[in-house]
Image (tube, rainbow, N blue to C red; front, side, top):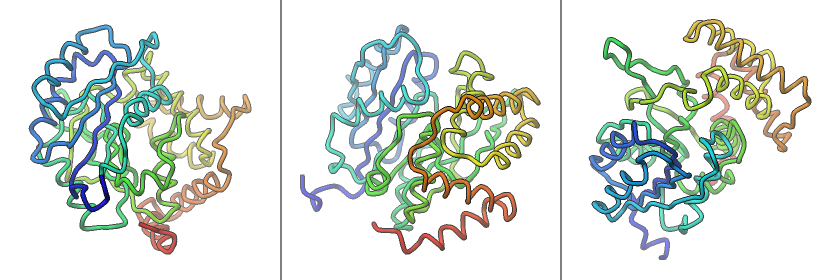
Amino acid sequence: MTETDIPPRDYLLISPCRDEAEYMRRTLDSVVAQTLTPALWIIVDDGSTDATPQILAEYAAAHDWIRVIAKPDRGGRAVGPGVIEAFYHGLDTVDQADFPYLCKLDLDLDLPPRYFETLIERMEETPRLGSASGRSCYRAASGELVSEGHGTEMSEGMTKFYRRECFQQIGGFVREVMWDGIDCHTARKMGWIVRSYDDLKFEHLRPMGSSQQSIYTGRRRHGAGQYYMGSDPLYFTATAIRKMGRKPYILGGLATLQGYFGAWMRGAPRHEDAELRRFIRSYQRRSLVQGKSRTVSRIEDEQADRWNA
């Protein structure tokens, strides 16, 4: 297929999954109900032992744009590098040039009907917008949707929507913890704009970190990932203290600090791109003084000349 033959709004979804029977119908139904459905949705079953394969077979039979790929059982749920390994297990079966947009999508989400059409519209309006998402929320006991508290300067990891050119220029996802932070910093360093949008909310059906052994395991892993990414210790300590005000109170923030400084004391490896680590630390230190929004705006202006569509 030549560049001029590619439909301008075609997008590719890739969903790594394992044992998602409890939540996946809500995600599947919300994608089927999209005002703009994907050209292709590859779902990589990473060794499920519940009813996931049967549910996937049912939807694939009903929709010819859903393709299920079975990956050998790794013996347990994988997060971080394992998820990205499964993602590439699906991506490597297609030619990226056939799709102007691509998205890594988790199967524990409920998306509004115009979710993907809205993201594409915003990329059409802003050529420098390389990666985008809505904002993740959870449903409180009162029934109200409550934000999970992520900043708007990153696209969210459970629904990473990318312009193909941006995804390829940054080299895709690293196969390490914090892949979903490193990609955004790399894109911004290269002059791209990255956003998540407050007015485009989706429901996250599984609480953040609950797919780990415990939420504290997930928080420690996050801290170790921040060390790997090159995060500034003062900045990370400040963010960990702020997180102590959210559930699980105090202990959640302490677990992230344990993960970060434990990795530091062990001399754990860091991301090999020293220039990117310096860029991240500079952004973080400036954010402590200026705030994230002003810092991101200024960096986008500074890096504009580096942008190459």
